[in-house]
Amino acid sequence: MRSKIIYVALFFLTLLVFACKPDGKTKDYSMYQIAYNVLLDNDSGNYEVFVMDIDGSNKRNLSKSPSVDWAYHAHNGEVYYISDRETSAGSFLLYAQHVDSIKPRRISFVRMADSWLDTRNDGSEIIIKPHSMVDSVFYIIDQKGALVQKVDVGLPYLNDPMFVNDGKAIVFRGSETAVKMDSAYVDELYYFDLENESLKQLTHYPESDSTAQWYHYHAGPPQWNPARQMISYSSMQNASYSIFSVDLDGQSLAQITPDGFSQGWHDWSEDGELLIYDGTPVGDKENHDIYIQYPEADTSIRLTFDSWYQQAPLFVKIQTDE
Image (cartoon, rainbow, N blue to C red; front, side, top):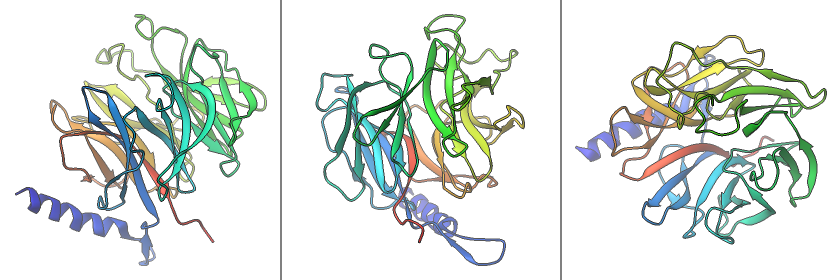
């Protein structure tokens, strides 16, 4: 039965990878691979960064270290991840590793927060969140770890920055309450213009919904979809995580994925059509897997089939445009 399920999934995924465009021509997504994070050993807390082809085949361990390695960004065939491999447990530095390489390169000695990050200017600059013991603002650094700019958004809690508008602004997860366990803590998405240093709140968690506890995302880490000019994010609403979208004016709020199946960390293909995410059926404590779908599709295709926790997938584009 298991092999039959996998066969059927791969058949439909083949149709997806070579999807028909409106003009009848075939769109090729084979230039993409998918990086994702796997909890290999729960007792030791060993997370590894894995990579697979877009059809779910050729799964392999990229980071290969008995430490915490967690991928938060990909650009030009490289996967950017935080790791405590050279430090004490929980003290993260930033690394990048090409999917065809066996060793990462360390980018910075700045102690990192557990946070998503992003690049601009063809990858030459990186926005990161330093650990709170280092600083309380975002840093923009270069590929050698040198500080380019400090970004103070004026909030007591800030995390998960994402460049938008060709790197002229950022969207991030923030709160007016610094401590997550505080009963007043609610994380929302904010827009910050880097040129005029103006701040605008984009999301507003429904006051009528009480299903998000302090440890849940009210508004999860943002993902920018430039092709559709929208920000997507996960949110615990109606007792399950779903993926929502909002534009840069805080308008056009929409729910992308349905209730009843928890969808969390996610990423978009460059053309804004393919969506990958980690998900699990509500109440299922055994399976936490990677799925892929078109935004308009009614169903998703499961890419991983085992009992490991597999999370936070990223599109890794290998072939650059000519």
